[in-house]
Length: 78
Image 1 (tube, rainbow, N blue to C red):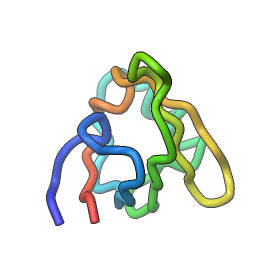
Image 2: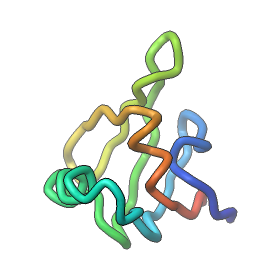
Image 3: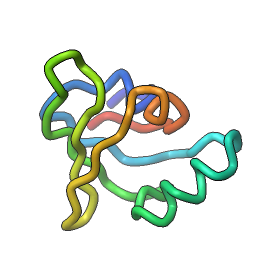
Image 4: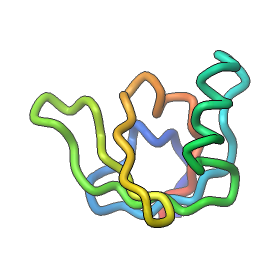
């Protein structure tokens, strides 16, 4: 298990969210509203052809996240 940002995860990885950066505050609140909160489990499904955005599964939802957004999410890759 290793700790890194969500942007460093590879397709097929399962990650546990450890922390979400404070800035920008509106992005943090949007991620919380989507269910990406500390302790939630994310599964990296696939990347767009140029590597951005990535599609993740959180709970029963499928969410696309830009690499810039994934940079503020600290995860533990399992």
